[in-house]
Length: 310
Image 1 (tube, one colour):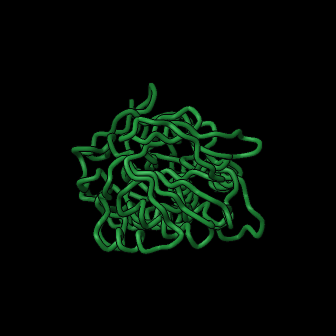
Image 2: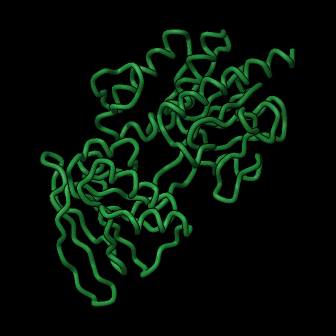
């Protein structure tokens, strides 16, 4: 028989754990389905310097653990198991996880998003050690350095321009001989004296190790069919993100890119009693602090929904 819960939270990044904290403090007895690999993107992040309250940098996993323990202190139940399916066609909602099923009066979806990667082994090994998917998060670590940025869309150009605040030079590696970015973003990037372009090139390997970081990269000129080494101190991958919304696809409204659609300024989705928080509903900011903020909002929205339903 399915267990009854006031609130079930799917996901355990900053959004899910903040939702758990607020829900637990408000006596909603939340259940957090953390996933088999809990913690979200911060678990692969080394130093976090831009989360409020930490004068010195905090390690990503350390920040997640502190959030987790704070939620547990107030009674949030954490289960390290993946939610495998949800049924939003009935009330309470049915959530399947492992061998158990739960009936939730309110559901908070905090499943996050994942950065699209190239699939290189060195990319995975050096993530957080000179390889990054977030210029806003990590750009300040590369003052006076030479960087490669992979991508050609609006977000890539925005990140390239942002990185020039810190880097001595940013080389954009793009597989085509023209950008996909909007004209205004193209103009901003191409007019920046710190940005150069490696047209019709692809990244084939990243050189370095986790101890000393990135020392260079191998790029391939697609037109000349030649591979060469370029010097760089860091590599930023900016080829987009994919929201982890498959669990609710076809049950709540998603936008063209798969992000959960929420009512402006709220966390309400197209299904009453279902709330979306963090990166699964945020294609713009994608920061730990903004995710945590929406986690708070989601818990408060869920509380008000439950009070109104009584």
